Length: 546
Image (cartoon, rainbow, N blue to C red; front, side, top):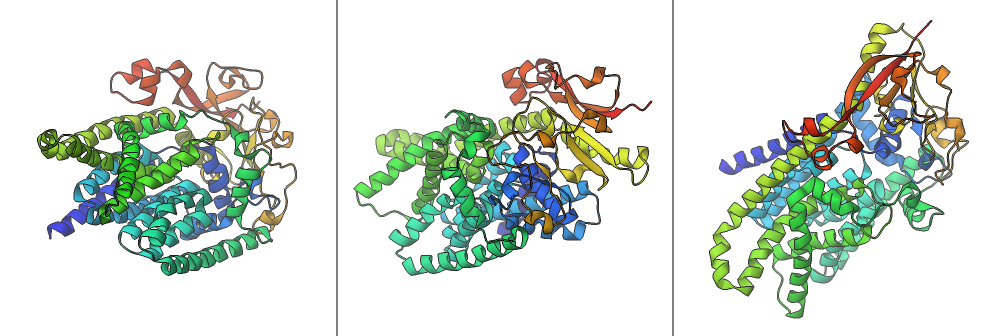
């Protein structure tokens, strides 16, 4: 009975944490909107924005990933777009919960109860998991599959372990396949189950690749393997991902510190400790226990991931999503291994500190939870205004406009915070772009409903992120306008609140990062942050009529 109660508490606590993410986390990446939410809206409603990646000329995004989510929303097409948006987020929260539950139970059973409980408590309070768990991104999908793969590996479910890696590589994000390296090495070299591995891998590849190729053939009208195309583009493309910005080596360290605070610091210590322990066992020909095999394999996957992605110039926060659970696991492993190192170096000190491992883990998770909550609240308070503003468009549509009227909503410099067409009140609303200081390529509407529109090679689209002037409209065509009303003005980015042609309908505070204290804009401290950060106004304007 006690075990059943614990499992129920475990599941429900994760679910509550993920539902909070579904309703309160921001959309932190415009790629999520224009490469995933927009094609999803297109498949469901026949209208949405198309990026160059979905042009049949390039085909580096798979419709299979989008179609899986479209199936979930089919019963909800009769409801409004905002309802559909949050319904999908609730589905993602549920999937994340199931994957985390499975992984945690496997850790408790095969690695250790202390590490499993620490992972549980750290995961549900982690800001990193709050951000990533309900994002509609292949990297989040890869995170789900990673937890399933390692959970299946620990439970000796080889089909699930290999199949989950194949699924994330072919349907989600192909680069996440490298996380399966420890599983492959274990099955091939340690357990010597070559036949098992090869048969599972072949079955997974044929089944999943067949599904993605068939789905993409329907929408592209040509045979493509999108996962292969994206690898070829990133490795051998003319400009590759570096066209979209590069970051220094410290980018991921800052990201880890913000999203995992003290746990990330422990993880950085744990990685060399794990490698040292592995090398020591190999040199001394020690038999590696089952729990050590799993622990070292998971940490090795994290080492490989950092080794690959730290060296790439183009860095983005979402690239770390697949290993967020591994960061939490590695921090717990590091604390346990540090005690083993102490035992080897000084047995008297080991006996003194041995009983303190549990309290130390509790204290670490408590600090992590407090700082993570501060970070999550800061993100909500600072950057949630766009979702709130766009959610209010439905009220304006129902109360201020005649039924069936075509409405043009425009954005300039704030194009990248558009939360998707699911927030436009009806098919009569169009989003248009005003020219701003941005000099890259913006997306354009699909030219026809699916599948005809997805099969056409769109005009004025390139793979070099070159600006396409045809994307812009004149401001005279706009009925409504959404903009961040701040003090950084240019000719192309004016202050619309002082323009007599526009009246303000709704304004909400939005963090002005350059004019705010670096620490208090990153972490919310009650009674203090409000005095040390500054806000601009995220504003919905309506054109004044003569």
